[in-house]
Length: 285
Image (tube, rainbow, N blue to C red):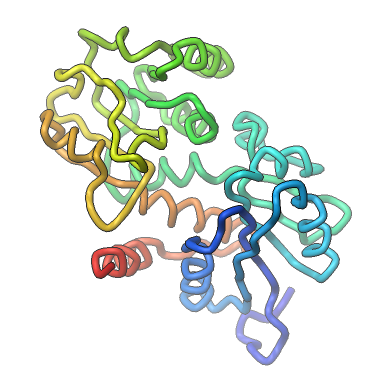
């Protein structure tokens, strides 16, 4: 293992792979982690053509690369490529972290869910135990966070999706873990939730899924996995409909990165100062 104080030594190589990738904040985040913890690493962003993922990982590994983050659209391919997978990655059906220390055994993990849970519980001080949670969306983003959310022992999780069958199928896949169900949005009428999490991409289009007006319980919070330099359309909707607090997904981004960093380096960075730095940069843009 590289002496963490020997910066004359060649740094260990890490990267994020995706398409598109030019706007990724991962290199900046991991560079800040490395400085903070005294780790001698170099972290870059690699654009990978669709159809070229396996070759790209092979090239990176052959050149001595130690680990990769994987983003859209390659998380399912990374899952298939991994020789070993964590339980949470197995459940998620997707991998966002590859550990390449042993070139003969690629280890795959998914840190999205634990990143969300850490942001909710540690940074936002939200108690998930016994909470009524609504998770909007039934795609990869939703699937990736379900197991870590259910481990927090909420009272129930309801998955809502425009295509109700997708929500029901996803709920069924996790039904052995806890009280979870799926439905369309129209079936939410008359229900209330302590926490609503938006795992859809609607905010990217300035849209909000069709939620009933009184769905947020007294004292309830809302969380959008998307983030930007101003509140998302979903966050604005929640503020207008009685939410006691609304949050975006910047903290989740940093926390999932911190978990990847820990998997690779066995050192856990301090995240709050990094989140604050990125927030300040976003607010300037």
